[in-house]
Length: 316
Ligand SMILES: NC(=O)c1ccc[n+]([C@@H]2O[C@H](COP(=O)([O-])OP(=O)(O)OC[C@H]3O[C@@H](n4cnc5c(N)ncnc54)[C@H](O)[C@@H]3O)[C@@H](O)[C@H]2O)c1
Image 1 (cartoon, rainbow, N blue to C red):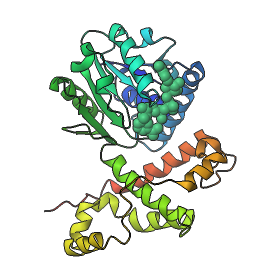
Image 2: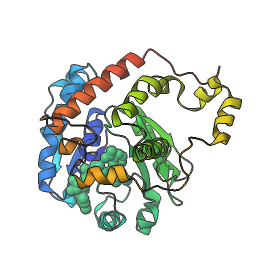
Image 3: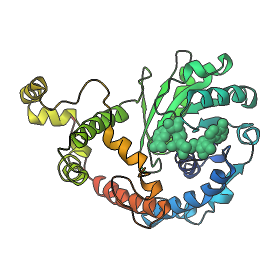
């Protein structure tokens, strides 16, 4: 059992805290915004309830009060002092992260590891020299208590032992840590998702398709094959000459340069920013974000449980 400090209790932080708690660690959670910190226990309880209903946590965890099991800390010093691992899950700006890392330099225990959840920033140049050997990225996917992939990568000066400590800790909690040799902004899964998004938004911007047509095509066409064949095994099944011909024809390959996403800009300007606003591409009605998260999680769990008996195919 280790002492884990999570800094940032927003969309990711509270949920990562829950995973570490369920993994048997002692967890402290802090946020510079007291309202966000105060909201975290209810979100964690709802997620724990959903996991319990689906039989994903043992009976010993079912009745646990997350508000008591996870220590909410008003100050950074209280959260990170004496922690073995500090998870950074604050806003995605280089300046905010640089300022936090400078504070952590004096507050963290001398051997403690700093694990950043950054989505795409190369955080290593932002870290003070004295922390470099102990700093790495451990990048989770939302919701982290359901999605198993965690991208793990060190910087030029990271001690391989720190990477191994975090990798082993994640694996012991049932996660699927993928250790990268080099930092790749956006990692792999997010880059593939970004390529899909670029194509979808260009189709929408061109007025060729509707949001419903996009999501129905993915749900009924693309999605079912992905858990079993992913991308490259699927290409093997298609036949590589055909894959090559389609690519070289280039007729529907996404543009290499970033495009101006008019569709997205229009929705955002109208306040249609997504589930948190109750509307985005779709109207989400009167349900609260917590209700919608719960419903999403229940459905993902059903899929996950159904897929457990089906092994992916990757060669012989
Ligand atoms: N949302 C996702 O799906 C997702 C997935 C993977 C990685 N990430 C990454 O995780 C990090 C957090 O993202 P999020 O979506 O949870 O953001 P969020 O905005 O929901 O939460 C960030 C929280 O950090 C707090 N904060 C800001 N500065 C702070 C500081 N100095 N000390 C303590 N708390 C501070 C804010 O008050 C906020 O509550 C980002 O680096 C993001 O790129 C997000």
